Length: 406
Image 1 (cartoon, rainbow, N blue to C red):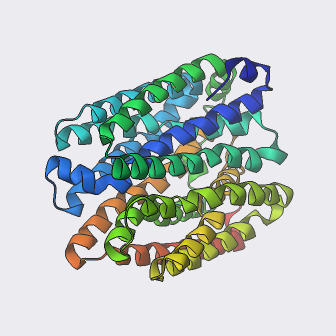
Image 2 (image 1 turned 30 degrees about the vertical axis):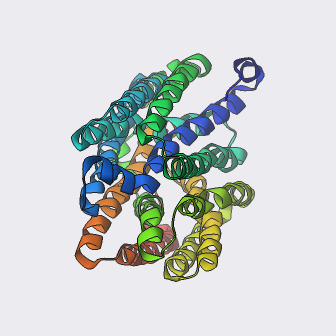
Image 3 (image 1 turned 90 degrees about the horizontal axis):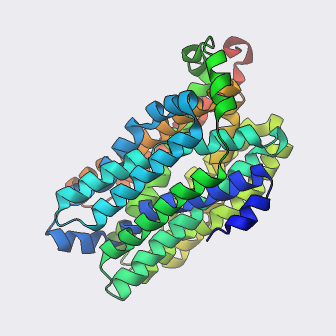
C-alpha cells in the first residue's frame, strides 16, 4: 500500500499529502463498510428496529464529535503528530472490539472507541497540510487528501456488499482486517511525520491570541452552519442510502453498493478540478461555495425523488461531482483565511465539530422518522431545507463587509 523508501525520497509536503490521503481512506472504509449489511447485522443479533440499528452510527458520531475540540486543543498544545498516532491506535482497538463482538452492546462500545480514535484526524491532518503547503496550492492539496474519503467509501460499500452479501463472509472478518491496517498506519505516521516542536512553541508564544473572539466571527459561524448542513445531506447518503434503495426503491444485492459508491467515484475528479479553480480564483471563493451548495441541493433532491435506477445513478453522480467532498477543501481554506496559523487545529476542529453534529442528528432522527412513518424520505427533505437556509446565511454575512470586518 505504501512504499517506505519511495515516501522518504518525496518532498515533505508530498509525503504529508500522501499518507493523510490513505488515512482518510481507512477512516471511511469503516464508516461505510457496515451500512450495506445492516440486515445481516440485524439477523446476527435479532434486531428488528431501524432506530436500534441507528445506534451504531449515532454512538460513533457522538463520541467522534465530543472529542473533536479536546483533541484540537491537545494537538496545538502537545503536538499534532503525537495526537494523531495515539488516536489511530485507539481507532484500531475499537475495530478489534467490534470484530470480536458477541452481542450488540459490544458493537456499541467498539463504535464509541472508533469514534474517539477518528476524532483527532480532521484537525491534525488539515492543520499539518495547510502548514506545509504553499498558500496558492492549499485547496488542491486538501482536495487530494480529502479524495481518500472517496476511495474509502467505494472500498467500504463495495467490499461488504460483495464479500458479505454475495459470498456470505462473516462481516466481523472485514473489521478484523481493517484493525490491522489501521495499526499499521499509526506506525506509518510515527515514522514519516516530522516532530511538531516548532508548532508547539509557536502556540505557546501565541497564547495571547483571543481564540474565543476569533471563532465568534459571524463569517466563521456561517461557515460552521454551512458545514452542518452540508454534512447532514452527505451523511443521509452515507448512512441511509443503502437501506433507502433496498426498502423504498426495490434495489437489491451488490447493486446497492455500486449505486451508493457512485458519489465517491465522481467526487474525486470534481474535487481536484474545482479545488484548482478555488486556488486560481481565491477572491471568488464565496461565490463558488454558494453555487456548489445550491447545485448540491438540487441534485440531492432529484436523486431521492427519482424512481428509476438510471435516474438515481445520474443524479447521485452529479451530486458527487459538486457535493461535500468537493466543498470540504474550499471551506477549509475559507476558515484558515480567518484564523491565525497557530490556531489551525482548533479552528478546523470546530468546523468538523459542526459537521459531525449533523451526522449524529441525521443518523438517529432519520431512524426515528423511518419507524414512525415507514419512509426515510422526510430526512432527505430536511437536508435540502438546511442547505438552502445555510447558503442564504453565508451570502448574508459576506455581503455585510463593513459590519463584520475583524
